[in-house]
Image 1 (cartoon, rainbow, N blue to C red):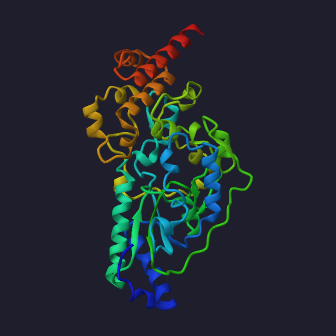
Image 2: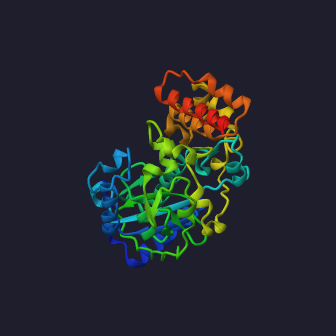
Image 3: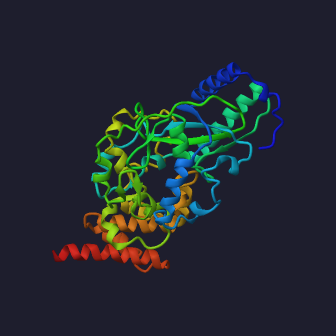
Length: 365
């Protein structure tokens, strides 16, 4: 963070208060639903995060161990940072197939609602950059850096401190007026802005998210074992999915929303008016067989600009193979699996043959 911002250091408390208000107003006009400001003290979160890593709950996400304490010490990641502007943007698509119907119909693929449209990283990063530029036009140069789930940043503890919500028992951020279906982003800045007050935890005695998790990934309130989480298994995990977890995956081929869908606070979730988050290529209503038969070229075209690309084509086929193993036995299902039972990828081949064996087992029952 290298800018000449000596002029901004002389802003009065009233000026800074007005500026914070202006930042929030501008942010709302850019499509964010809420903006909050926090300091950089994440010492409490640092201890919890270190313990989580020590327990190996992060699985293969080795990148979470890199960068030392920079993730929990913003000033080390971006020298000069003294405050953080935290934003949230709703993503629940206003036009989509009924979600419950999608999960129940095992012939159809279920893709986490956040990934149906355009990659949120690009959408939020562009808007945050616009926000910073508009602030710069008002006050002149200041030090800042924009983040959207793209660097060692503890975004949920930051958002909690900024008053955007509390971290629920499922470890997602919950807002009392908007549920949890929203994205987060941050601007690290050297502006000495006034901070907002955090929101108290309102999960109470509810354990709905823990009880419904298909793979029992929430090992206790506020503690997630990512190695069992369907979102991790279908996106971050690159090898063979543990056999004992495959049936729990059901028809979920990219991510999982169960813990959020059951959360009582999501009765307040707002449907997003952001066109970027509307389903592309009818991904909210595709059959598993249809998606399994996409070749690499078609997959490349239809996932361009999508968060789905993170799983990779091989991960995609692996995931759909598992879902086909959990699907009702139909001729088209068996024919699709048969076409890839000798795939060149050992991982895909193993999952396809597992799926076939699932249907053979059903015949014997």
